[in-house]
Image (cartoon, rainbow, N blue to C red; front, side, top):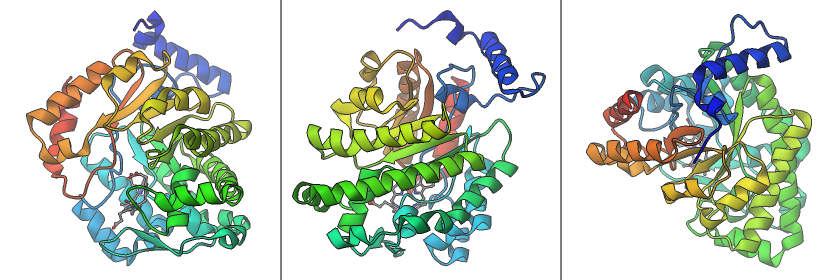
Length: 370
Ligand code: 1CP
């Protein structure tokens, strides 16, 4: 796919960066280039930007130690000192281009007054919402409740290298709603799908609360120092076209537009996991800068996505668990497959706890040598 010459020319990119700096009134002699942010903004860079989905977590012994110290998982998310510490852990070990705020998508329901518990060895647990529960949510308390997370963003920004991009995030409304209605994770999201069909008006009210809360939450993350924000739509699978448009595309589009109404040009990554045939529509209609690709997406998606749209992904996390030649070969093919557009190397879903650290080291060394 042909690209304008200037997108391939690093010297020009640096010049353009300097012009940006002039426009924004920053000193032009010291423009700090963040390769990952550049890619999100649609510019190809010499250095391949890399981060790993869920890069802080149980595969790291130092994470397990800090989590034990925190007592429980939500305490870890709400204690800025500890959340900053676990955010930095993968950056100390690996040559990565981004830090991602350590938190969870389920701090939002917790902030709205639907208490969330994380039992060790099990996923999240919530008391499932019914129609009256939706109307009892308390959006007014969310900002104060989430203040420690914003403080964590501030602390991370203060200590990471200026070249490192800081990624903030929240869950997209549909994905968060599947936990709020179902009370826990499930493989088919049947509880939320049925609820949305039986009680569309109540479900729309829930989505509206999540859209509004997410806009405010992400704008505060950007103001505290996040360079980019990512919308995790981890359960975009299992929806028919109509439901996908109603509960995935429309709310994500409203969040993107709502953020940009307050912070024009805010860089946003969308990750609609499992969107499959709806990916091009999602990209065109939500307005995200970068599309996250799960590992089910074929490399040939490159032919049908809008020219210049950035992509992120899509290595199967189990290739990283197994390691060796198959992992390195697939990583090389992914990089080659997206060489015609801005590309951020990542996994197609979160790294899993039994991933050997040596495999991640080998993967990153391989990518740096390409
Ligand atoms: O036991 C533990 O220590 C908890 C494991 C854990 C961790 C490390 C959970 C519980 N959440 C997190 C952190 C987390 N969650 C991050 C920041 C870490 C980083 O990237 O460095 C992020 C971005 C998330 C986002 C998240 N939480 C998503 C979207 C991404 C995805 O994987 O699809 C989802 C769906 C959740 C819900 C959730 N939180 C935790 C678990 C085990 C789950 C999934 C439950 C399920 O399968 O339904």
